[in-house]
Image (cartoon, rainbow, N blue to C red; front, side, top):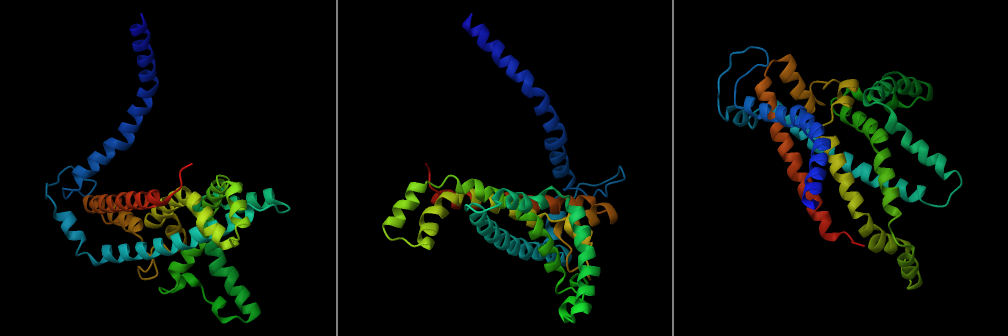
Length: 293
């Protein structure tokens, strides 16, 4: 009788899980497998006729200067994004964790950008860069404000970064605030009694307890940096002169505008493998140093 009840319980659990598993497999796993198959062909995304060409798409991308330029852009973009968001989120998290007047209001204010869509944010900043700041520069006679930061290949990336950082720092800040709640107050008080400075308390007590949160932030921001698309679309569409053509923008253009669908898929798979590998490395490195309760 007990065995029958156990089997019935397992069957009930399986019936609840089956619909979600079926939908996930059909809409996520199956398209990935189909994409991997097409990456070994010369399919253009439209015609029914295509040929199996093996690893030619994968070989081609490593000599494709346009693809390599997009990779360099994304690496530089992701590095700056990670450094800025991580530093700002820790600073803001520490400030917003203090006992200050209006703390709840400031927390809500800093989180507000996270609820705005990425495209909307990009379009707003496009107007700021193109109209508001040049007008302000003319009014105040400030030369560097008179020029649209998005109009130059040397500065366009930084315009996108500023927009991304303004919106992207919200969720990491919330994660840092949550992580700070796990730091035992008695440890900080004991360290202070032993003569430790505020910086030493932060370095040797707060940071080790924050490592799981920092690891999560690094993975999330790395993914955002390597897959940035919405901000590029709203602000520059990859220009000027291809200076801000990210890998995702390149994949879209090659897949849906230039009809190099299988080639775009092979690039996407390669980038996905790199992101997964770097994320696993990041997590393993931070796990070695984090503090377990």
